[in-house]
Image (cartoon, rainbow, N blue to C red; front, side, top):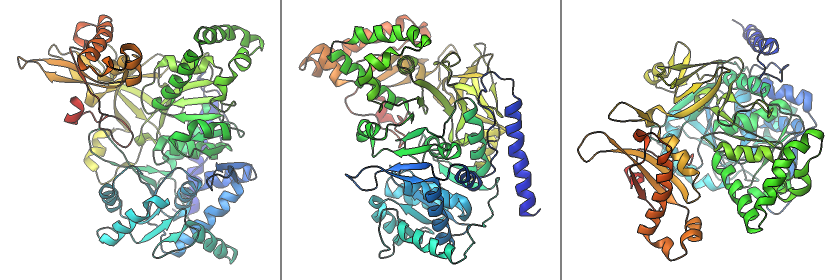
Length: 601
């Protein structure tokens, strides 16, 4: 089959998805007429045709200077230059790694690689040198693009001679150096080649079913898997997701989550580019509030920890000012006045809204369960606050809550997206079983792991490892992870995530991990909660001295645990608690490692 025939078949496939969306009778599929796309190259080039002079990226390139804007057209010129230079230096059809802080240079490298060079391998910037070397070796990457703080690490990896690594590029360097190329210099070199008639990159063949990215997961069990994601896996998600929650050309996405994660990469980077919106890069977690004021974004993708921290900071300030009752009253009244066009929040709660820059339209939480009450607080402020569901193996999106307040369900991770299907395998009497997803977003498989791939994808259904149930409208509810479930002596299932959620609602608890130990008689399971208290909250209740007294702290925590137990069936009750002062050991996604013995103390 010729390349033209392949692309024609891919265009027909994308059009069929769009046509099925247009014909859908599902009331939650509101925003139709999506643009059919076959691969990342075609997606970005078609966006440039539509939105060429619109801003695509906002970034502070020089510390202390204002944010600068890069348009779609300017970005495409850079991508064409960079891709051409890569081919010139022998990187065509190779694996190319990229690592570093969220920035335009990282994004343009990703677009250049996936747009006609080879396979991109995003690396986790939190990993240690030996782990990065292992992933470079495993992925067979021969080139790596990095921000300046990683230069020494990759010089060492290259010098070891234990990998295929040969081509090093500093994303921040002004000029080529000793054995390390400059991102800027490569773009200049490539642009000159393009101007001279070099079309090797511009005409490069990109096939939708070929691997676009090799993504290494960071699990809580220590096992890292390489997830092979195709061009079309990503494009399928891009066409499907904005049918439930709309993205406008004037939206500004605030980018703070690590861009190597698929959640941020697909949803916070590629999605705005598909829809003609723009991306504003946060300079780091400690600059969140400052950068929100400067960039005044309209969309914010985050994990529960970020939104919980913002919520706590807002409420702490409200309490300090003695305005808790007043804020509650305004929020309640505004539910009625907003229906007749009177927005009390903008008038009386301007200080709270300004925390987000004053223009925030949508906040989306993903990656873990979030307290529905926190989502409701942001919804009451007048934003659209929802949670979604996805996994790296699904590129990553699988479900999303609608942006219509009438339809959203805070307790659910969302409605299955169009073109996908969901089923619950091995369903119990309570309707809970393993969540399985089918659709064009499901990965090609695990890299060099045929057995694990065959176990995970059965007859096209990806077995997520998440336990939960669906309602009559195909909204998904998650109860826990299959590998984490605690089975009691009488065969009952206890989901530690459920108990951790209840503990998380206690102000005195900073973090917790629920696990099971064998009973003293060697029979059954005793449910244990390892708790790291919130020191500031303890001091507010017990005072500075007593908050250091382990017995008094434990007694106070037990009062709250007992209240939680009162609302639970006996087999779910927490029977033992362990108080810890040190942080839990976590993976690079900042999730607690459940099977590390040190976390059980």
